[in-house]
Amino acid sequence: MKQFKAESKRLLDLMINSIYTNKEIFLRELISNASDAIDKLYYNSLTDKKIKVNKKDLCIKLDIDKDNRILTITDNGIGMSKDELENNLGMIAKSGSLQFKEENEKKKDVNIIGQFGVGFYSSFMVSNSVEVISKKYGEEKAYKWVSKGAEGYNITECEKDEYGTTIILKIKDDSEEYNYSEFLDSYSIESLVKKYSDYIRYPIKMNITRRELKKGSDSEYEDVTKEEILNSMIPLWKKDKKKIKDEEYNSFYQSKFYDYEAPLKVIHTSVEGLCSYKSLLFIPSHAPYDYYSKEYEKGLSLYSNGVLIMDKCSDLLPDYFSFVKGIVDSDDLSLNISREILQQDRQLKLISSNVEKKIKSELESMLKDERDKYEEFFKEFGMQLKFGIYNDYGMHKDELKDLILFYSSNDKKQITLKEYVTNMKNNEENIYYACGETISKIDMIPQVEKIKDKGYNILYLTEYVDEFVLKTLTEYDGKKFINVCENNVDLDTDEEKEKLKKINEENKDMFIKMKDILGNEVSEVRFTHRLKNHPVCLVSEGPVSIEMQKVINAMPNDEKINAKIILEINESHPIADKLKKLYDEDKNKFENYTKILYSQSRLIEGLSIDNPTEISNLICELLSK
Image 1 (spheres, one colour):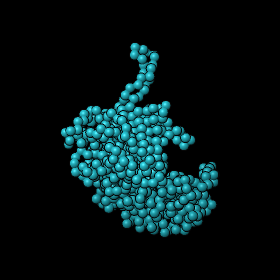
Image 2: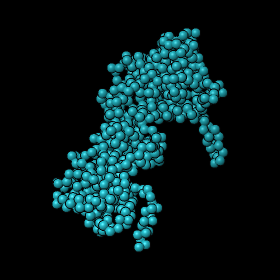
Image 3: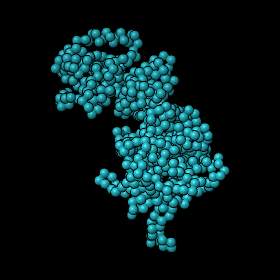
Image 4: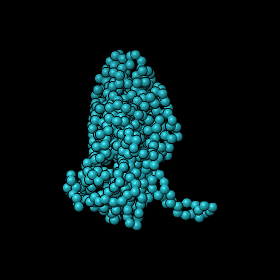
């Protein structure tokens, strides 16, 4: 028995048990090797007239012998000589495919999948022993390579009628850790071929037994065994998109990504350049049930020359475009020895950058030319775009700010920030917004009424992330974002400001007393002109708004914050005169009114009341008099 030349028993054991964590990929590797062997023969036939090959006869065959626990993979490719068996299989990490590719790298139509020569050894993950019987095209003798693993291998001369290679795997017995018998089940093998090797360019054939109606019978069934082609061979993304119908895209998407609805948008691209690739991307028409949960896994299916490398390659999508589904197929990617994990190299980063730009461009086009469709998309995935602005300290805010929508009080519909600014009057300097659970509830916020009455447009923020988004943006096109419920709203004329300042100064002692009654609940009490018909409101001062306080305090953690709150009383409302009178004549009732007004202002803002029973009793007492 010969020893492996390149590595020790320990290395082979490490490779089998550590590098490949997913045992089922052994079939992908062996089929890819078989495809490579056929590619080599076919390519050589194009340049050597002595080689006679009928492309229609080229194929890969799979056979299962359950009784003897044998799985066989056969190809009619170029085959291997004794020396090639020695060099390619006797030396771990030496690849004939890589050598062939290097020798022909300047020639066209050379498309070899295997590059590092270790995929073959993944067969030992599922096999007690491996036999490789191969006969090189044009040679008389065939040879058998046999190994039971790291202890070594033997090569002997044998008989083989046809050129090509046959790999015979003795599948391991089942254990408590793994059910190896699944690799002896025709339906399991069929599903693995469709999962990993569906787009291998040569037919992958296997005898399949299916239950069918007997001929001439309406009720009797029989088992019928037929040789079937398991793979589709031609990827949809490699076809001319001008010849692809919408139904084909929809069918591919629904079957590939298990969606019951057609996609909202299809993005089919072919890129040539520093890194060439083809991509077929889909924007779903609805969010998956687990989309906004930790269980959702983003990523595009990544192929190399039609062979699935990774089912969900998360590196190809930024988080804010994680709703996109699809595939990327490139022959230029550098793979590491396991072929499961991509190196973080220049090609991958270039593809990722291009994919991101393409998605953004398509969304911008949809927003401009298909507004109804975009609003439909935004309803499902708009929050993810907003997260993209807020996350990573606003690193991506400039890329995403023109893709987000908010409800407009003037337009009565969703608008972009650009549309808000475009419709501003020349003297307007701020973009106003208000926060609440629903549009109707925001409409009832006291401060909103006065802003609308002056003709200003207000953005209604109904999702908990909205205000954090605007705080991250800070401004748009030089216009600052102003919360109508914050202290810095300034709509009064100089004359009105002076009048209000004077009135507040005159009633300073009353406000100090109200502040004493409410304690640390408020930082200040004062009259205001910001209200039209409502008696009171709360405004915040500082970086934390009342809405942000509600959002953060509702999160399932121990972090609690409090906004700096000011109680404002409508100076033109009858309640203002009532308070003045009570302050002079009835301090006890004045205290009760103060508590009730403050509780009323909290309820308007959607805040809870710490002492509802006391407030209820006070209201009943007032009503009974």
